[in-house]
Length: 278
Ligand code: ATP
Ligand code: MG
Image 1: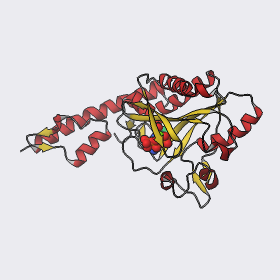
Image 2: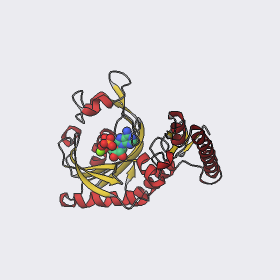
Image 3: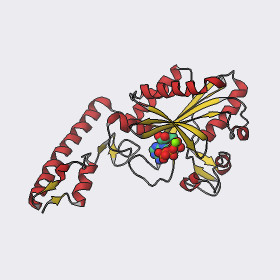
């Protein structure tokens, strides 16, 4: 007979970042298992305390904030303009993305009342401000936003209800350059994020038609799309474009080898990947 970690033990160990997939999780007696648990927990708690101390004395900012700042600085140096728009979105703006009650994403939306919701994406706001910027500025125009988006998710390691999106869009580039430009922009972001070994994959999206996904170790870190696009007319946009939306928690998770996005995202339980109940 062999004994595996109890449910409580395995939950505690995985909270502390221990990989439970290993063979080492079976023991000859309960006593042996409980001793191993105590020893492992002790080591992990001490490692976590060391990480917290290092965070306090040296880095002092969560990797998520550093990532946002590094990417913003890089995009600005490449000629992009940063915008910041409201988190609260109207139902009619959402409907213009064809996300109405028939749509799969609709059930993931957090509603504040019958006319307002928390934005599940940045695209409607970027479309909205771009109409004016394209009237006022010469093309090409490149803009980006980094901000929270909200979706009711069935959870798992790669999904948060509140996550940080970097959405960039470049308007008015030569039509034949769009694929090349998407690849170039994906490269800029992924190299700046410290994740140069990514792959591009063609995908089908319910909102955008055909899209290009940026994949890293089988995790989707971004989706890209291009226009002219059937949604453009609703926003008064008549030019070519390419755009990419990245999830910053996924980038930070992959860069830091964290087990999930929860530990690296906005959290009351974790500080920069370290569990606080240690
Ligand atoms: P997935 O299929 O993994 O749920 P998606 O295709 O629905 O993602 P997009 O709408 O393409 O997501 O959003 C762009 C990016 O935002 C994703 O590639 C991902 O990096 C990030 N993202 C989307 N939803 C979440 C979430 N709930 N938590 C964390 N990041 C997310
Ligand atoms: Mg996607």
